[in-house]
Amino acid sequence: MNSGLRKTHKFVWLVLAVIVPVLIIFSIKDLDVFVSNENDSLQFESAKSDVINTAENELIKASIVNIQNSYELEIILKSALKNPSSILYSLDEKEEKETVIGQIFSPGIYRYNIEKQLKGVMLFDAIKNERITKLIF
Image (cartoon, rainbow, N blue to C red; front, side, top):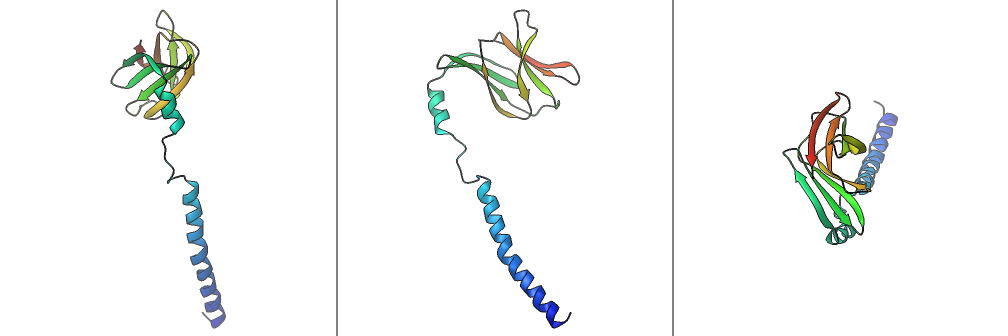
């Protein structure tokens, strides 16, 4: 390596030493790591809500909540599903699939706006065409 290459090599490393930390700081800033996950409006809204029905089994917990004259279905998935394509259906009077509510992927809390009070919900695997679980309110 001659003196020209050494100077270029030194200059490139100095530029990288300045640019890389700046890029890391901007990327961390965009991740919203330092922002609280709790939304104050959701806490205020949940204080005004009335739980109408609740059902639970070993896999999920479902609650129908009345928030200012509209219904919301809250599903808490307790553990990971073995099925990658789990679809949540509402049940009719015969306890059969009626309408699609939404899709559930991983453990967590899911909220769905619903038009009417439900008789129950069914978690269904669309690929294998089999029922995972069913809850009746």
